[in-house]
Structure formats: C-alpha cells, structure tokens
Image (cartoon, rainbow, N blue to C red; front, side, top):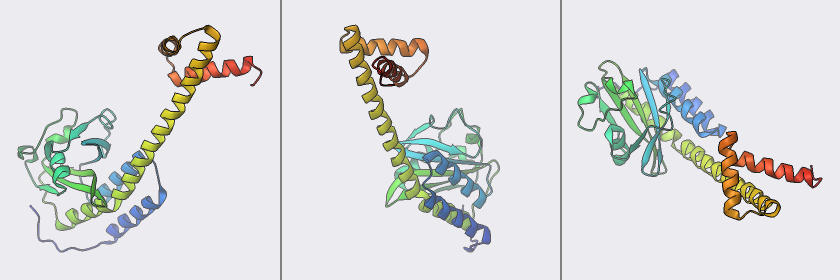
Length: 238
C-alpha cells in the first residue's frame, strides 16, 4: 500500500544522488559497486534488510546484502519469474508489500535467509537502456507502509546505477575471459614441455599437471607456471 505523501527531495536524498554520481565516475569492480548500492539504498530508506541481485542469463544471483551473508552471496540464485524477486525481474515492475510478505502468492522461502520471515517487502527492477540488469529488495521486520518518496527514490537509484552495474559486470566477464585465455596458454606451453622432455602424449601431460594440482593443492595454472619456470632456468633464461 502506498500513502499519499508528497514527493519531496530532501538534502539527504541529494546527498545519495551525489554519491551515485561519484560511483558512476569511479569504474569500480562489480562487488564494490553492488556494496555501494546497498549503502545508497540503506542511507535513503531506513530498513532492516537490503539485497541486490544481478541478472546472469536467465538467473538472478545475490550480489550484495546489508546483513552479512557470505555463504549466500554469489551462490543464492533465482530463476527469472521465481518468487517476488523473480516476478519483478520478469515484469520489470516494482512490488510493494506492506505486511505479511510471506503470504503473497509470489513469495518463495529460502532457509539460508532469515529475512524471508520479514513482514514488509519493496522490490524494484534495475534497468539499463531498457534491459533488466538486476533487482533491489528492501525489507522490514515489522509491517511498513512504503511512502511514495521511498518507492520513487529506490526506483531512481535502480535506474541510475543500472548502467554502472552492467558495465562492471561486463568488465568482470572480460577479465575472467582474459584470465582463462592466459591460463590456457600457460597450460599448453607446460604440456608441450612435458611432451618434449618426458615423452608424454598431450593427454598424459594434461593428466600429470592435473595430478600435481591435486597433490600439491595448487591451481593448474600455478603448476604450469612452475614447469615453465623450471624449463627457463634449465635453459638459462631465468
């Protein structure tokens, strides 16, 4: 239920919008951006819980929360259309529940999140250029009538940070792809060394690196780097 409170921009609202401007100019990593979005939202609206989900394909992934949930961040996932959050993502429209949120027919319980027992729920889509980027959830332990200002301000935050979240997510994906390519090059080089010096087949070299990775509790990249370094030293390149 939404009250008839007039739309008033307070000095604190202006401060939040100014901080968002700073965020957009900062080009921070994705999780830093998401953590600051939580800070913006909780500074703009007093609440007991705040979650920020990021869209990954057709899945919403929990990226940040007001309350510590290290076991759930990057692991808790919802399909678009699943639960209230998924409904918001699917329809790209806010959902406002002032009390008995768990009785909403779209609600879905997650045992790892005690916030699911909270009474009031405000969920807004995060949009960038007409494309869904994520969802922001604000929750209260007690019944709470969300004012027009609260709904408009959280929606505005979602609109303003959408492009920054999308940019940070794409940069993270590009960084991961670059890391994967670098690792692949190192593994290929290490396998070639083992094939040349130990007479292994490519498959045998791959299995040898994999076995050393497990035994030494090192990544395959680290094992490959060690093989390459040893070869360089042996050849006087170090």
